[in-house]
Image (cartoon, rainbow, N blue to C red):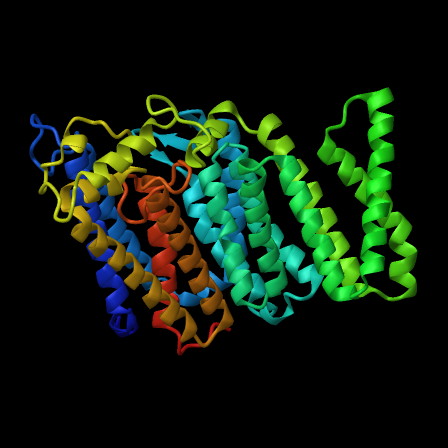
Length: 474
């Protein structure tokens, strides 16, 4: 009993207080978001705010149970927890309940549980366990592939549900890999892919192709410092592209100009491969593969956008990028959310005084768009307070992660920060209209038992590890 009391005394009280503040503020905003004059009692269990209170009470007991479990349990059973949750992700595809086109919930009596919310904690545990003695080996391809596999397996299973929002959250674990030694070149490459993705959607594909090739030749000129060699490269590319264009024009008639240039670049690379090898032109070879890879990628993005994405997904992206306006259709949620937040002004309309909220203009306002209630009723000041609480939580968790003596606890801590931050960033971003609507909750704030329990698992396992940071795991 004394040991249990000592564990509680070692729990970080600042993090615990921030957790309580966010949960309570979330509950009050859920009450405001679904307020019903006929059900004014805040403890009315027929309403969402009453049901959320039940979840909050069970969450407190869950948090205490997590704290009183021996910290070594999470280390030794990390793979078992991960494996069990992977099995649940497989089973939900077979026997799950479908809601709004997504098969992601188990229905147990009046309660629906979403295993993908809990699998985030399982993934964080398995990744921390695997990297515990290998965090400095992420330059090793085998270690990187294995660590990536632990992340991508649950991500793939959530794609099949399909739940793209949760899939993106799983990818946040790559931030953990970066912290633990993943090459910055790989991380920067990921950012470049993101930039190219939006360029491929916003700009004409031919213009992007010409811009990338021009950049490649400019970099080649800087590296080689020989105008004649660069001019020869341009001539070879132009010649092969022209030949392929003529062949397509007279025979196949299926290739667009971007594909023609890409094919010309491939043939040019074969011609220059001997030059790369003989003169050991490593810099020029890197530039060539950068240009070639970029062109292949933008063509794949174009194909995936028009052939793999569903129509409503394309609409959301087009509205976000202002390529299309549909204020009464696919863009309705975003428009109403922005109007709701903007109408709050500096100080807001007062608690339960939001008209956008009261008249249900914003769909899913107690879940994905809960921040609209904050903006409308609490105004800019209230919004800044809520955002500040989250920032304080993230900074505190980073501080706790860095003070860990074991790599397992540190890696798991960064996993917690990554998941919570991505949820926060995407949820707020889609609410204010700078990110597409992909439907993920605001941590500890949005209505929902599975998400609240899932975030609590993550946070309190880490608090338990931190409370025992001076003890040895093995």
